[in-house]
Length: 83
Image (spheres, rainbow, N blue to C red):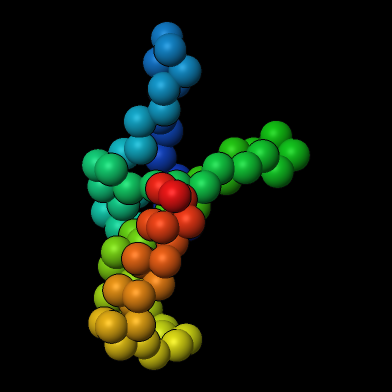
């Protein structure tokens, strides 16, 4: 879908708004995707949020840790939470 092209969508009885397939595909969202919504004046802005698992695998890395360090932190947190 070309950038800037507009389509109409109907709001259902339960205020559900269905995103047309062409728009969903253009911004990379599908069933189960998480989006952020906000109001700007009289407009509704919908932005797709990155999938946390995809981001963890492909996104920028800020720190390095070993499996042993991760496991130790996990065990410590479990002891704190579970007593």
